[in-house]
Length: 293
Picture 1 (cartoon, rainbow, N blue to C red):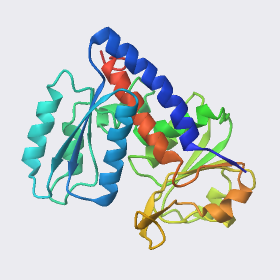
Picture 2 (picture 1 turned 90 degrees about the horizontal axis):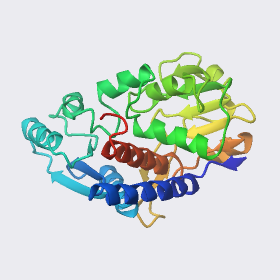
Picture 3 (picture 1 turned 180 degrees about the vertical axis):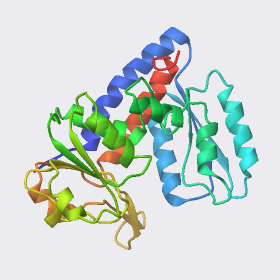
């Protein structure tokens, strides 16, 4: 068993991003600029956004955080998004999910200019991804591809089983792993919570991407020896033994599955760090007009 270490891979890629950001600053006179909108005080969202802002600073980006309380109206949020869409120095815009129940996340996602949609959630970017056209790939699947590249893992001809069908991770991951590229060229099976023979299908996986949002969902009896395990899950539980007051668990039972695997991502320290790298690379590409001129 070997670790797919997100810290190692992300630091290496961030050095490359920082060098390109410095070159962009020299040529354009400004830094790539990422704007994040955070609504409410969800603990997980606070942590994620703070990490994104901190990493922007590390690689030489400008970052701006716009905060609203839970009472902000959908109309107010849409108005702010429209303003940012018109800002020529706003390269990337993300609205941190989840949002309060009175705000439609689909409406918010579609309101973001797809040319600034560095999270890769807009229907235009998802549609272009399906057609294998230049686009902003959703940040988490993009980060997973970058990790596989960093460790030079050849995925060609392998059977990839994706557990979870969300529009953010599972569905796009299944498309990306099937495309004619490396990473890619897999035979892909997309499974979910309603799949009847889930265990039997996951057991066939040479590569397993667990993104179902349930603690320790993938157990050792679902994994064949030598499988490559990508654990996307971040499940928070209160803990009296940690300084933060909570502990993170993946969707994979790491202790039991790791000995059977050839490669495995830890939680924390795996896919989460690579998601930020995917976001940073999308933001840099937006600033440099590499996807949409």
